Length: 148
Image 1 (cartoon, one colour):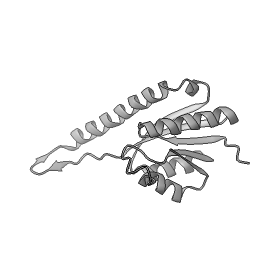
Image 2 (cartoon, one colour):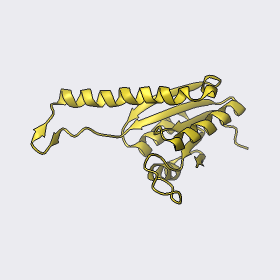
Image 3 (spheres, one colour):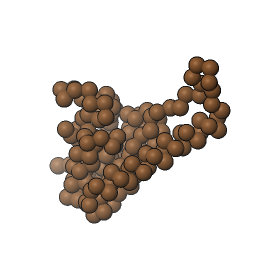
Image 4 (cartoon, one colour):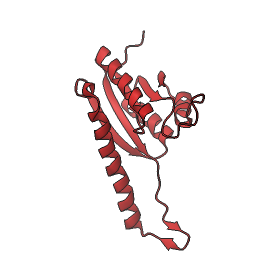
């Protein structure tokens, strides 16, 4: 039987991610596991649009603001769950392609369970698995729990 010690819960701050986080926290409390919550900022700032361009410093400032806002949103999301204070938890914001960064986090931290929402902010359809969840499921080396 699987007894996870390190649980990764990716979040996009949607209601679906809230459900995955709740389940991840419950599992962690049950088994005394550590929870890693990660949000991936994948919006890239385009330097030029039509005839208007930003300099590199302005682009970096905008990207830094995206990360800072994501960190604030992560804190707000975690504040919704009292159980987050009952388990060992680390929260982080990464930049890049979401599925790739989630899988990188899995490898770097030695994750043994990923709890991820089957649908995120894009909410394609209640009958389809979201693209990020599907790619994580295909690429993961550890078990993945898809939540609805």
